[in-house]
Amino acid sequence: MTTTAEDALIDRLRQHVGPALPPPVTAEQLAAAEAALGLPLPPLFARLYREVGDGGYGPDGYPLWPLNQVVAGGPGHPYGVLEFLDWGCGMTGAVDCLTPDAPVLLIAPDEEHEPLRADSPSLARWLADWLDGRAWWEEEVMAEQGGELLPPWPAAAARIAAQLP
Image 1 (cartoon, rainbow, N blue to C red):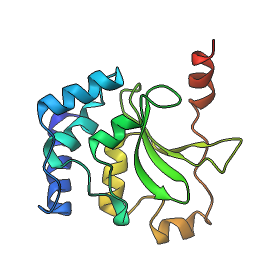
Image 2: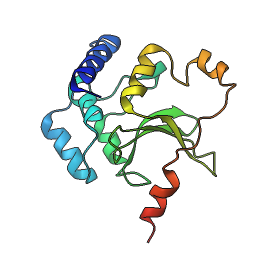
Image 3: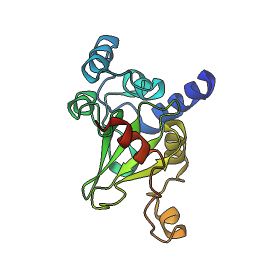
């Protein structure tokens, strides 16, 4: 996504969520978070925290966590998959920090064989789908999909295998 497209998405998100948010994190807080995690945050994900707010907003009343809560979850399992949103029922939203487009995943631990699900191919698309009302959690979209759970994340097995001793 070009910077201009990202800028437009950030502006649109700011307008959508309004001013009643925790203030954005500072550059120093962001740098400390990345140091604690041992990996850089995807640029658009970092911009959400630096330019929109430190969590407290999200789709359908499911707010993004504050950055310190994201960091508390550690560098993720598999490594680089950071949880950032609680969907309830034990499910969380996560972002893959090791892939350039920052795919968004659904972690559904009750799905014991395939707990990592592909929510969106990129964070930018995930945000746009939320703002446009086209995301999987929208009632109309769920009805069209017949209530089916999202497909397994195709990179899960390779990423997990790469981390095994």
